[in-house]
Amino acid sequence: MGQRVQNKQMSITDTLGLGFMTFAFFLGAGNLIFPPFAGMLAGENMPLAMLGFLVTAVGLPLTGLIAVAKANGKVMAMLPAFAATALAIAIYIIIGPAFAAPRTGLVAYEIGARPFIDNTEAIIMLGSVELKLTQLLYTLGFFTLTMLLAMFPGKLLDNVGKVLTPILITLLVALAISVIFLPGSEVGQAVGDYRNSPLTKGILEGYNTMDTLASLMFGMLIIDIVRKKGITEPALQTKYLVRAAFIAAAGLAFVYVSLFFLGATAGDIAQGAENGGQILTNYVTHEFGALGTVMLSTVVTLACLTTAVGLVTACSEFFDELLPVMSYKSWVFLLSAICATVANIGLSQLISISIPVLLTIYPVAIALVVLTFLTSSFKRPEFSHRLVLSVALFFGILDGLHAAGLTREVLQALEPSNGLLAFLVDALLYIERLTAELPLHAEGMAWLLPTVLTMLACLFIRPRASAVTV
Image (cartoon, rainbow, N blue to C red):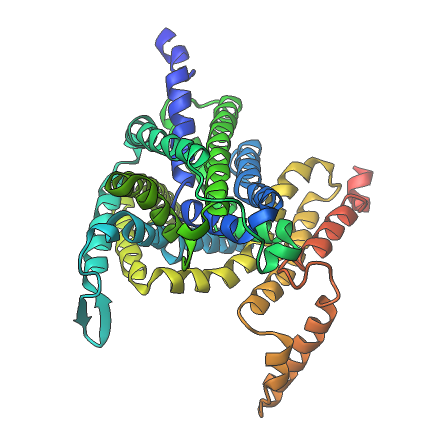
């Protein structure tokens, strides 16, 4: 009995390991490639852009983890079963096999392996499809290793939190120190959207990390890991999850600030760069030569691998519970195979496809996190959750369509002969004209004001008469 009580507490080492593991799960492909590029483009407006990025890439994931802890893993409990399942499936697919997980393999290849390969243009034909041979071989190996590590989720805390992550953190600290003491040049001028609206642009760039979506599933994964450590009381699970969240948030903020500074001071090193990965590679090669390239390769590979393991594990556990037609290990195998396949689409294509999807789903995820903290303040919590999330989804879809290129000009150019299609185009044009008047429409955040106003209105909705009677 004494041993059982003792097992209900986690040691400081285990708690730090849990925090490091959480940090490693979040620190993946997007976290390393987006901040340097944003810093370069933001230039003199870097502080505001960085603040916006930290809001959505650190603040929201931290808040998401705490929301999951507060709701004991049931953040979608107020939604109808069908809607909750559909939203969960969409989130798991987006941050799993569709976008985030394959991106980890692609970034690991582009930054962690490609600099050491002489011929990266060799092509192999699979039927009528052309694939780059070295990229194909690397992503197959990467996701095979991911599959093997994800097969044994009980070992995640030991393998990732206590072994891989300290190595990763050491290398990132070394990189950050070099950025501070060996800046490339003076900070340049802001360009593009960073010139007029750096804060908003930084917020939207933070979407690309997908970490707010990931927090909703990583939170449940961490609770499960804590439970397997013998922590069965919800209050203790919440305590350890919150501690892990703050450790992870501190680590992410440290990395982002240093990478933003790297991009802003890159100068000539960043000339011709098309993404943050190229800026990183150019910087470390310029400052450290071959040693720097090896260091960066190790950092990126470890970061992407730990994130891929976390994503595949969480997705496999979710689908194993939702569709128990296959075993957990079978889901791991299937999802790893899908990730390896999608990864061969190409990094730039994958990023461009993901942006409209993220602009659609992110408003719903953000609203869900905020609603979790307001649930006790609503007189009709179920109705409030459903109404607010419906509004967020509606305007999120409009933002997503706009980002996908379905602008007013494109709609006006369409001349469908079918009556139903013509009605649909006219309806979209009417809605586009209305939403164009909303604040932040051009920036892709037209959802914000309607969603906030709906949320505030729900705070004043009176309970049903029957509820008052009772």
